[in-house]
Image 1 (cartoon, helix red, strand yellow):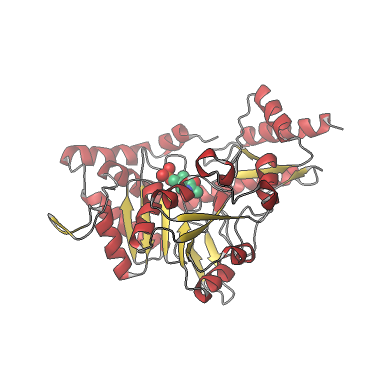
Image 2 (cartoon, helix red, strand yellow):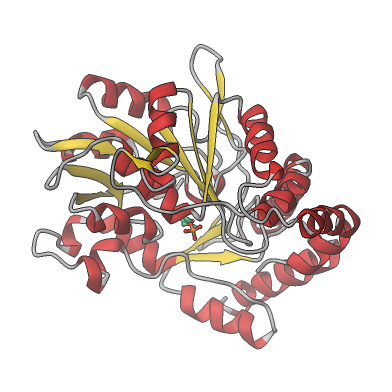
Length: 373
Ligand SMILES: *Cc1c(COP(=O)(O)O)cnc(C)c1O
């Protein structure tokens, strides 16, 4: 699904030099590259504070901790997302309240969220799924009207840009109260291990986030609150510093692959290509098709026999996960999530795709549909 080896080889000299620098100084924790990377990412995102941490799940947890929610408070999340989004909410004793997504963009919409708001709702977690921004303008308005925090999960959409109706353009993760991201190797900006970050323009919130990520410590050995230990290590920061320079180029490569697929699959009946919004760029963390008429699993098996990988993100909505089973959630209340989980199929998309690979994958998909007629 990704080609991290060839991606590394293309920037090997720079990455090796960054790693060697840390090895030579042995500043494995809190080395200068960590601050440098946070600064560079802040410039890229046009955001005041970037606080690195150990992974994307931690970033979400730290954000939740920093906002001062109380046990029993409700946090609205999409039901069609990766588990990490809801996991930290439950872990902290808050209540994840799941909502449907748009069947064409896969993202949550203000119109679905509004029905889930109660007196206990404190926050919304929009997930910019697969690389395209949630339609944030109506969502932010809704949050403002109901006095809710907005915690953006931008683990899949680092670099995507959203255009507001007044033409203001903002990066994913910089529109709400706080943004959270992951540098897991296969993410759009991936390191060579685990990593994550939070971003915000709010000085007080940034200070609290820094404190929580560092054992609740305000001054060395003086702990103001119960925190956690969540750091981005220096080796990873050095690698990310190199890769950040290529992030726009990486997004362009992913878009070129998506364009190729879109063109190849246009007009194939029973197959829906991912819808692109006018108000957001897409960084194609995933290229996700909707395969209609119950043919998804058959297509996946067919591709497998031709040596072509494909993945189902995600096979189960959150409410159907054993960990989140609850009598409140009934499948019949989530027809879109049920439909998506049985119909989506993601094709390989990454920064190193060749014309030949794209050709081969598209031809196999088309051959499947031709064999159906
Ligand atoms: C990857 C991912 C995370 C978690 O990131 P980790 O670094 O693996 O902890 C959270 N949310 C979404 C949507 C993700 O895709």
